[in-house]
Each structure stands twice: as C-alpha cells, then as structure tokens.
Image 1 (cartoon, rainbow, N blue to C red):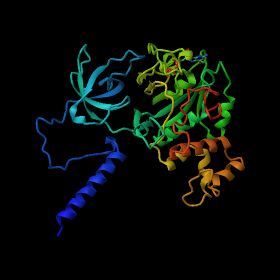
Image 2: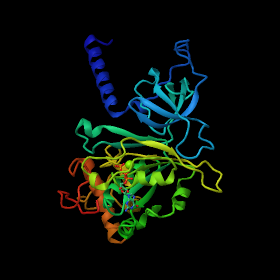
Image 3: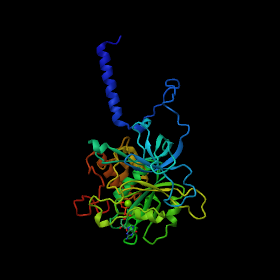
Image 4: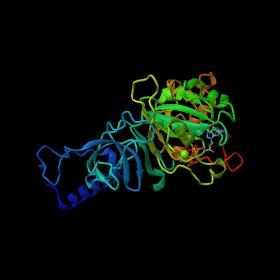
Length: 387
Ligand SMILES: Nc1nc2c(ncn2[C@@H]2O[C@H](COP(=O)(O)OP(=O)(O)OP(=O)(O)O)[C@@H](O)[C@H]2O)c(=O)[nH]1
Ligand SMILES: [Mg+2]
C-alpha cells in the first residue's frame, strides 16, 4: 500500500528528477517515438510524403534560406536558386541551424514571396557547439549555442598578425572539433604580415593540417582540402574569413571589415552563411560547401566534459597512461604523468599549460571567460601575448 504521504513524496521526487533532467539535456537529446498504435495518423498530422529535401544555408529572424536537394548540381558560385521557409509548428522547440538537412512542404517554388515550411530535420552527422561563456555557475554561462550542423571540417582561421594569433583560442577550437567529430584544419591568414614559425612550432607534435594564406597566394591546396566536404570557418573578428570566402566563391560578396574598427565590439559578418564551392577542375566529386561565420571572441567549452577536453590534446593523451586512477591532471596533482611526459620532451610544455588552463576555467577557478581575447597585450590581458 502506498500512502498519500508516500505518493506525494514520490511525485515530488519525480518532479525533481524531471527538473534536473530538463537542466542537463536540451531538446535535441530527446527522441520521442510514439508507440506503434498509440496515435493513429490523421489528416491533421500528415506524413508529408510529398516533402522535398533541402539544405539550410542561412537563418535570419525566423526565416530559413534553403537550397533544394539536387538544385546545387552544376551551379557555380553564390547564384543558387533558393527557397525561403519557416519552421512548422510540429518541430516544437527543436532549433534549425545552418547546415541542417530538412524536409520542406508548401510553396517550394522559390518565387518572390513564396514561403515553404520545414517539417523535419534530418539526423545530424555532427553538431558543432560552443558555450557562450565557460562559467557554469550562471545561466548565461551554461547557454549553449549550436554553431552549425553536419560540418565535416572545422577551418580554424587565425591571422599571423593584425590581430595576432592566439594559440589558446586555437586550442579551444581543436577541443570543440574533436568533441564534435569534425576534422580540424588550421588556416593561417595574413602571411604577408608575419611568418608562421611560432604558431607552427607550437603544434609540431600534433601533425595538424594547415594552409598559409596571403592576399596573392594561390588557393589550390585549400580548395583540394575543402573539396567534397561541408567546412565551417571560425575565428576572431578581422582574421580574414570573409576575405577568403570571397576569393574561394565567385559572387559571394561577403562584406569585409577594416581591422581598426574591429575589436570594439564591431563584427563585420553578423550571421553564418553557407556558400557553394566551385568545382575543382579535373575533379568529379561534389565540390562541397564553405560556411562563413561571424567573428567570435571566445570558444566556450563548458559543454565539453573534463575527459573529452583531453581529446583536444592528442599530443598529451599518451602521457596520461602512468597517471594514478581518476587523476585530474591538474598542476597540483603531484603524481600526474603529464609533467614527466613534458619533461621528457614528448610534448610542448605550453600545450600542457594550455590544457591545464582549460581545466581550471571549467572548474571555475581560472579566468572564466577563457580566451575572450580581442584585448591586446598590455590591455589587462593576464596571459601571454599568444593567447
Ligand atoms: N594584409 C592582409 N590583410 C588581409 C588578409 N586577409 C584579410 N585581410 C584584411 O583584414 C580585414 C578583415 O577581413 P574580413 O575578411 O572582414 O575578416 P572576418 O574574419 O570576416 O571578420 P568578421 O566578419 O568581423 O568576423 C580586411 O581589411 C581585409 O582586407 C591578408 O591575407 N593579408
Ligand atoms: Mg566576416
């Protein structure tokens, strides 16, 4: 027999469990599949058998610009026929982001003023997320943003000067890439202003693929690396993402900023846009997509578990085999194997320092904003100039 008191207790407990769950998961984690016979389909819940496939290339105030599946074939540059769509109510709270593959119904003609409806979002191959802030103790700190869906490659764009490279930021991007199962590619721009030796030296043990770019450099190597993939560019404001996209994609017409105006809260690009890459001559495969994104100040990683952080540092992973069980790998853990690993020259000590700074920022006892660094050295930046 369950007394009323017990029942209330149970209900309260269940309420608490639900409340906890609601905080830990977002709507994308929930898969609700109604039982076979529980809800017969009626005319008010059509199956949308006539839906057509689309790829979301831009999102702007509740309007989604989509390219119909197949429409992109044979079309070069930014001049793709597009369909504007809104979300159907049945999607619930599930967000639609650039890179999503969706099912569309309604007016998919793409004619002026035509509006289609997104009724389904296909399962995502990858989800690149960042947290607004690393501070897990505030609501804003836990706010997670999906950068893009279905990316195959994360192009980490860093200028070699103006603004200076920040390896702390690049390290964070690498963690996000490995966590999301997206291939990283380091793209160093403004090679006409400074040499890449210092940045490349820092990543020697990583065998990180990279390309160097100057205003006049030929883009063949980059084109070959982008071919057949959905690649998303991330980087600080002013590093030259849109400049590069304009060179890669004829007619892209992405606005390009002036660096002196950047860093005062001004970002030239304001939303993510996917652009179709032109075919590589002599290569028959799908040319792929490049996604230009607005500059970001930091790449918050509060959503990445402490264990997964280490995967962003493959040069350190092997150094943890001699660690005691449940070693936190922090500097105050005397037996952590990473100190000996670095002392033996197996990895760069700056990489270990960077990893430990990330651990500390997650634990809340470091600089919670991590590498939110449009600040130059001397402007209150507690860290070295290369973060
Ligand atoms: N010297 C030099 N300047 C460059 C290079 N690439 C871009 N720039 C300049 O850098 C400035 C910023 O370029 P953008 O392409 O707007 O930078 P962004 O990364 O798109 O910036 P946001 O949209 O704000 O994130 C522009 O003045 C470009 O002309 C380069 O390789 N060398
Ligand atoms: Mg831009």
